Length: 139
Length: 364
Figure (cartoon, rainbow over the protein chains, first blue to last red):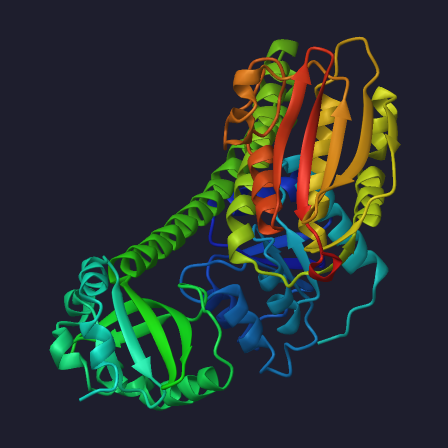
């Protein structure tokens, strides 16, 4: 049985998904990266009570169909999901997007870096902070 | 018979001149009755001067603004003064055929023993206002376009840079030094492009974001900028001298951006083998503060003095890396602060870039 902690990546851009997987592999991070490509799939995955919840959700904002904002809004309606840390990862650095994401309950707002080396560093520090430093609530 | 008829008959020539004016001219008594109108009024409103004289001024005012106009007119009669054309709000008039037209009005009170008269000159500005609206809408479209393009560019940039670095990581052992060098060059190029995209974004975001102005101490802005630039200042061992800077009304984040650009340029374009020297001084005019940035850099050829402020233009294009947007951004920021930024002088011994910012209103 796989006991590695799990990040759920919600990302519509296949290149970004692939690069995130590469980053986890190259940096040999002890975590499973599960990926869904739409906001709708993310909700379906998280509200399915038969599948264990991930430890952390990495959420893109701009996606066709349901946006990251809409996902955040929906998640806050489910008591089971309200304790799940959702970290936004977006290429937008507009102050308005940042404010709105925090208002809707995201725990961190991470600008997507262009440099892959920086992205690896971010993944390492997320792993270190969310899986090794803080204690998360049991679902 | 109007008490003014005699006056008008006695001034045949004046009337001819009056009628030949390109503007509409209207004289109204204190009750709001038109006592005199020229042919210009007919061209604008479609009523002959004969039809207008004796009618109420309200004839020319759209129904929706009649009651507010009545109030404005009585306020005006209580303290009549000259009002320059175009200085007030946007006004509309109503033509004989019912069409509403955009107009501008200038007012001049004439105090006579028979009672106060007001002379109004009227210009039809419908075409101008239409053009202004079209221009504003085009500008907004362009803004949206640049914003969209910049955002769309970011994702593929991330892919290119990312996969190239994955290559270097994964196949490190099978790549020789040359291949690694090529990969590094690609990564650097993508990073430069990314910087340009970011600057382009800030250029378009400037009009989108309208943060309110506050009182900003330029001393503090300079201190922040120097703090950010500390590593580069130390690296090139630059020497800086500056005097007390004023406080202005503005957007602190944008002013910081502006200072950062000007200081970075001064640090970047210094002569080979020499330490950059930068002097910041302040002078003032009646209405503006002027901040002078003097460097001992390699200078800008005179034909490039204006060109460097255009987007994607740069003096010494092949010599130095850089955004090509930075100074354009500086100029936009200065403009938003009621000022300007320009090359005051430049020789191979150094340049002086000047920045003007409007003074806080009650200072002058």
